[in-house]
Length: 433
Image (cartoon, rainbow, N blue to C red; front, side, top):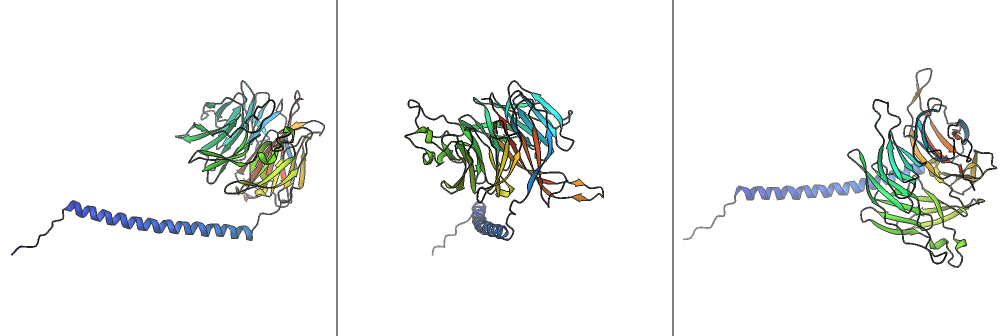
């Protein structure tokens, strides 16, 4: 009589089976959590839409009045930028000087730096000021630090062309820089900013002047879709979208929609600059010929919705930016003023007169940041919390002293002491003929 065979299971096999059961159980829990997260995100989106319907953004009914004037620049203004806490204003002018003003202490000049050539772009991130120059040099400076803690300026990169625009992502760890035909990508790692790569250039477009293509020139760059992609506007090549995961670049709109091959003068798609709405659902572009073009951001393209005609005597770049929670835009002009237009119909709301109106002014750029001001105390010791908007405009005539004017919102809900401000920086700069 044969005995049944008994297979002995080692302790290692037992542990492996236990681990397999644990992995299977963890996978089931992870799948359940994934489903719950998707459901929660859908509920949050529905709640956001409900709150938006219940409390829609208020229409822009306020106006702006002049708050103060800065007379320090000795040549036309290239760029302006407010610090994130709203206390400091940085300016880059054609006299090759970058200045920082203290808004809370009588607009006093607290820092100056003279470079070898004019700075063409400035932008704050935390307490760091990024400066781009005419010779393509991108540097970091720390003008608001005390002299004990102040760090030396750092050269991040030297590009081949002048730096015209900069854009940070939401977290502030990536930076897009427009320099001629290229858009450069930088990343902050271990407290250092490092160059990563340049965005693929668009396909050459059009033929003119004995068969030459239109030059490629990047004018603006915007982060999209949780910083996983970006939208770039080009002077002649329309809008292009770039996916950071695949590094794929494709046309998102134009330029063939606005071009007549039979007559190059009939090309109405030259995008001088562009702006993205706060909800990332729309884009407005200022072209060199006819004014503003309004677009809706679709999954696979930009859909042109309408145009607002703002004819100018000469074709020069005019800046534009969304303000008032996307309910209005502000743009530069060639007659010494900044125009505020409401989005729904594109009608003018107010003109902020900066110059005399007799000179031709060129605004090269607009920068916009959401500022959080430290709360102010009244004489009674209570905190005053209010909402206000500020605008800074700068003009200049070559050979004359320029002015930077600060404007503040004039509405019933505005307070002279505010803790939170929407700030738009608009430069109106004249050029010699």
